[in-house]
Image 1 (cartoon, one colour):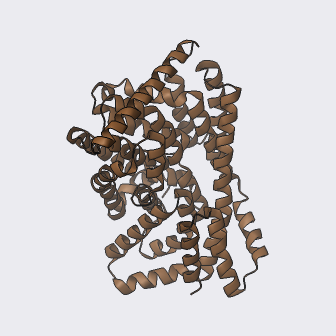
Image 2 (cartoon, helix red, strand yellow):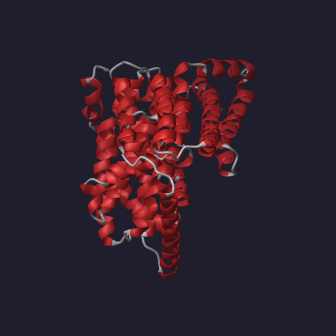
Image 3 (spheres, one colour):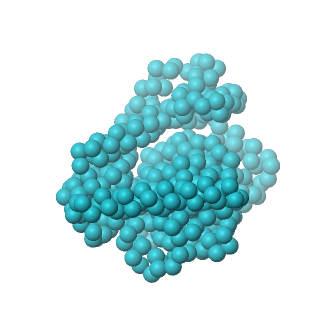
Length: 447
């Protein structure tokens, strides 16, 4: 039962602010001292596990997302969606935000990158159209999670690596849940906008107006600066990027890793020569941002791999299944409890850490319940996504607040409504309707 003090150590270290990779190492040390495991062998095994070409996909997609953000492609993707009928009405601008996050997610594969890029672009536009302060932040946070559901997704790459299954199968398993989430988020945000949900008191409103004026001032300054440099305005090169990436993957021309490299090679010349927003300074900033993010993810991958291996040696999957069946032997009740557990874990940790840690632990449990690996991939993706925006911890919610300038206290109510009306139905349908998540994998021959 060493996993109990190890889990307590993990929670305590994260609560007091220890970086996640170090928190995982502390938890691993607790088990090592208890069962006499050889730390050197664990490090060697962890290195051997991450020494795979598949994981090279992650830093490449991170770099592609940073180049898109700094090179002007993100703005053109938003502009292309905004020019459709969705952008003609005020409430339609929220739908533009949701769809833009889905499109950007198909390029970057990262929820945090999607929130950062689309949030910074759409927040001034939403404020200009009188969207409540809290709704802006809540909508960007919930929509940003589409970055881990719409392929290619870093989350699904990590899941495929941890479960030793098909990357492409994992990609397509989350597509239909992602589309359903786009629809439900769009409908719910329209209702919230018309009801004015997400506004604050008089003081908050004054602060919001001040932020809105400042955002508009910055937007006008950016537009004025843009006129000094003639740039390509067409969104076609930006829109071609997800088509080229996904097309090359699903036609079998390129592997996921090669497609990630192609996305970097494509983004650089488009940002430099066509949109003319990628110069040495912005390229350096993009490289620094990507380096920091990729470094954290890869170090976290090693430490979580070591910890999950120790948990498995402590027979944690069987203990979890035994505990759940002691409460109820009903498959649907057990699945509900597993969903709640994954949402709670999503509230405490980022999506990548959760995926690497929970996949090897919960996969045997889900298989014992008759849930296929790709069905579990969809369930895990949606649950972790919801956990990342569920108060009170909600890592993506706080990120969205910083990016959009929205006050978190104003974001709570619209976020809870988006969870109840969009996220919860998506989770329930994905979990209990087997064919919902498995339709595309079966259709394309991955099952």
